[in-house]
Every structure is written in C-alpha cells, then in structure tokens.
Amino acid sequence: MRDEEKRVGVVGLGLIGIALARRLMGAGFQVYGYDIDAKRNAILKEIGGHPCGSLREVGERCEVIFVAVLTTEQVESVVGDGAPMGLTNRHVVISVSTADPNRIATLAGRLQGPRFLEFPISGNSDQIILGNGVGMAGGERSAMEAVAPMLDAVVKQRHYLGAVGAAGRAKLAVNLVGGLNRAVLAEGLAFAESMGLDLPAFLEVLKNSAAYNRAMDTRGEKMIKSDFAPHGKVHQSRKDFRLMQEAALRSGQQLPLATVYLELIESCIAHGESDLDNSAVFKELRRRRGSAAQRRAKGKGRRRQGARDRRQAPFGGTPGRK
Image (tube, rainbow, N blue to C red; front, side, top):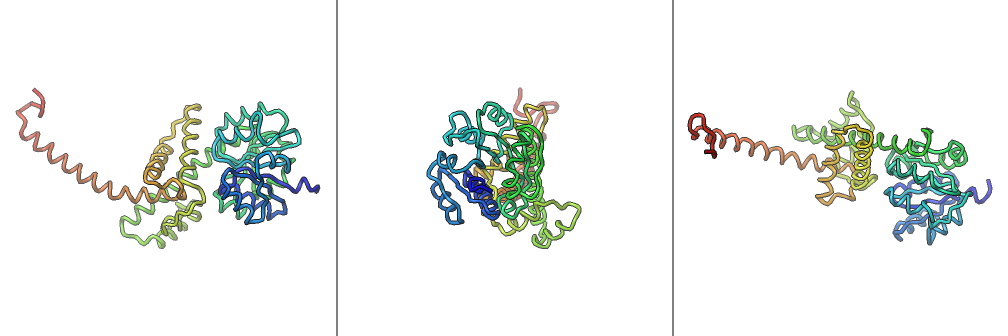
C-alpha cells in the first residue's frame, strides 16, 4: 500500500469523528483531521492522529476523506461546489452524516471530479469504537469497493443499498426504530420505578424477556444510574427526527410514535439537556410522573366543579349561558 493510501482524512471530530479516527488508526491508517473547534483537534492529537490547520490541508494530504459533520448544510458547505478542500478526481469523499437524503443525492449529482459515497453508520460512538456499528452504503458500487479497506476498518458489517440517497433513507428508518426503542425502555423503567420495583433487578428481567432490544444493553445502565455522559446527544436526536418528519411528509407516511418521541426530546432540550446522552429521555418520563398526578388532581377538581355547576343550573339550561 502506497503511503498516500495509508492516509485518511476525517472532517468533523465530534463523538462520531473521533470514533472513526480510533477505528482507522487501530487498523494501521494515519488519520489527518480537522474541526472548527480547536479542542476537538487537540483530542485527535492526544489519541495519535494528525490535526490539520484547515480543510484545504486535509484535501492536500488525503485522497480518502470521511465527513462526519452534524447537518446537511454542513455536508454541503464542506463538499459542495467550490469546496474548501480542493477536491479533484483523485478524491473519494465518504459522508457518514445523518442528513436529508434528497439533498445529499442532489449534492452528489452535481459534484465534478471527486467520487462521493454516503455511508451513514448505525450505532453510537461507543458501539463504533468497539466495531459494532453497521454501515449503509449509497453511491456507485465501484466507489465503495475502492475504499473497502477503510470501510472495513470502521465497521464489521456493511450493506450496499444502491444510489446515493438510499442509504440515507435507510438510516432515518433505522434511527426511528432505535429512538423509539430507547423511549420504550425509558417508559418501561419509569413505570416499573413508579410501582416500587428495583430497577437493576427489573432491567435484568427485561433483558431476558420477550421485550428484549439492544437499547437495554447500551442505554439501560445509563438510565438507572443517571449517567448521561453523551454517546449520542439529545439535540442530535432532535435533528434526526425532524429529518424523519420531513421525509415522511414527502412520502405521505404518518409517524405518530415519532411525533411523540420528538415532543419528549423537545422537552428535554427545554430543560437544558441538549448535550446530554439521548438516554436522558428517561429524565423527561420521570418528570411526567409528577405531572400525571397533578393532572389527575386537576381533573378531579374540574369534575367536582362541573357537578356543582350542573346542580345549580336551571332545568334544561347551561351554566354561563342565557
């Protein structure tokens, strides 16, 4: 392998970007990365990577570049026309961002020179570091095969889904199921706690029951220990679920459960929990225990007042009307 082939760029050094860097370095690649946050560049240096001073430097040093930014707009600004990395036909760009699949397909279609592969990964940063992420590829199959050694360094399982856009759509659907699994787990734990059950013991019951899902392994302990150090942040979940709603609107599919989950996440953010792990939805469901009791009390009060009003109303009349 040429020296150039051992160098891989990573743009965006958040939780996922650093996880990718660790996987790539563990497989023998030299990682050159860039983030607008100097603290994130420092983390890359601490783990043995090579922080770059600009996007242009990443493009000059690396022919294969992973893009791990948060939003669709950020992918477009990094990769689009006049991209600051100086992309040419020697480059392969791999976007792992969860983004608007239609806009990413449009972006790929107008690129002149570099090959583009979308490769969103199912799994939080810890799962990726452990090699348990699952990659979904969209783009030309030849582009995927050209960077197969890098993809296989990042994930143990990958699936080719077709043209650019297909993988992004699959990722939204996967994230919908994953988010709802977390919410169901959180609600089940909150319900068990409200009935006086011991949560560690109950979690073990859940893991061995017909209700098992993988969220119990990755988020169960975090919830019952109130350990919300982030592996996937609350505000990232909000971004993803808003993308799902937009995609569902285009396809004509209603997502009632996703709507409820997004409302829970919005409440977490309103309580200042934007940067916590998305398992913090458990905090919101705990908060609703008191709210439910209060609503019941208010409901009883309204029913009693309504009964008094009916007793005071003239026969056949309606209180408050003439």
